[in-house]
Length: 220
Image (cartoon, one colour):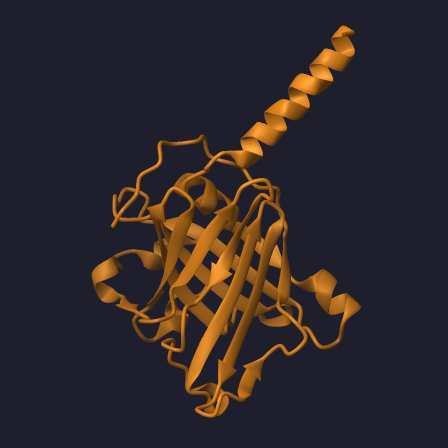
């Protein structure tokens, strides 16, 4: 076999092998970290808004994470986020993960911009947060597809927005961005808020910088 062809085969084999590996928490955190935009989707379909999504690691020294600060805002009002959360990631099995959702203490707006200025979170620790029960997103890594996919489970994520009783989320995560479909439903199961056609397509604004692989650590 010619050397050039052999090198190509070896390169492709390496890429396929890497895609099939179980990546672990550092990999998931790396794919979630960054700035994302739905501008392309909004330009193609007026039913969707141009939204900015920011996620950055916090409390990196803690061993009960990873923890991420999360902020979403309209593109024209990025200093006035409409959603601010903290996520905690954990691994349940070699291929399954959970992203817990935690509420910041009021007033949340005082933490706006913490994705670029972590001093705004000075003095804050997990004891000040409140977990949003039932809102955790359960993810499964799909070997060969290079995607984490999943969502909330059941109807336990409470929501009172626009007359809703509960909310659901469907999520997919790749190295290029995220797909998120958040919807609220009333007590009769009718959709009260959220996109109707499908989820939002958030594209990464800066290429991902992947952390080195780490041994799998499964937490009960």
